[in-house]
Image (cartoon, rainbow, N blue to C red):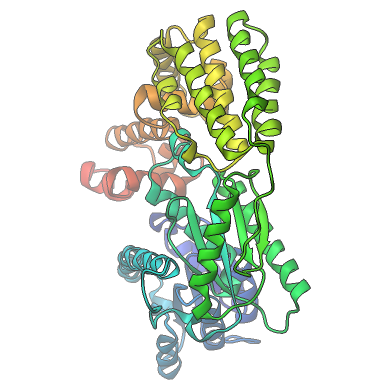
Length: 517
């Protein structure tokens, strides 16, 4: 939350008079005028802004005017100590969500506003999704004209970015993903924030691909434009990797285009991507949009390059050599030799590897191995993804053959018992993986297949269950309960509790233990 007021004591009262954690806000940024407020917004992109009207340097009306140029959906509540009716009328024209006199900054008056904001946020999410899908259909040539509501309709310095989640099908299989819709939402919010300075319009994530339409800055030569786009793509890639843990490859259009040219550019990008088929993870490249695309480089047509290594790995599984040797052989096959052979030969190697996994796993009933065998080559877009998948499969076979994974049910019971009796401790996936001597990625996949839920969700569910019990059976405060069940951040605890139960801890307490509230 961003609070803008030229009086320090007013900013302090706003924070202290209302329990903002009940509404999901736990971080505050302050500024003493509108100009500094804009700087704060560009840096942090807060979810809610409270601003005074009359301030030095830049007042609240000018601030709102400039803010709406950056983000037309920004949520702003205007505050004032005066009866500034003309100012307030102007603020509402700019799109602020509400107005409050400063003496009414308390729960009685703020609660209805926050409830309305939450409702509007849900409605906007649905409207935003429809807008994303419409834009995707238009870029795919399925709509004749772009809707009038898109701001870029009258622009002519447009750029198109194609953002593709690497190995999307494989990611859906192996990672802790709630759903494809959740992946789309998270990627949209991050990309929209990172690209906000260039008025982005984004599609939804469809079959692992999202498009972003941007306005290119004026007076930028070809070399400067390429440098700007490459840096923009690098920063977006780094932020997605850091905050979401995904690798993406990004293609950008090297030349500016008009709105009418966008569907054609998108089609040429798709064709070039299909021509190249496989790449290295996290690739960023420019595309000139000439209509010809960049031809895939010549590669050897035969599949013999991988056959010798496949036979070596079969022998390895029979002789139980060391795991480092196996990793090196997988690396040679999928990261060094695979890029040198044709896609046809690569498909043969992939099918041979599936057969290898199937032959060695046919004597065991293992859900994870069955999942690994069920994938297809179309689930991958990078050689790195193929390497990860292949190594995971043969390591699984080796672990089964050596007896490392016997007693898996007992291992699940051990984890569940430890979680329930150590809620106040660090129960992250990293910590648990070290405790049970599992690889972190393997533990994540294995736990989900054994229990039907992700490890992180299981831990949160146990903590929320314990919190409900303490709210009804103890005299502890909400803050004390959040700490006792392992949530060091009270605002995060409140948000997770509401997601799980449909109400905040305070409201749950009022309903189930009224004598305490």
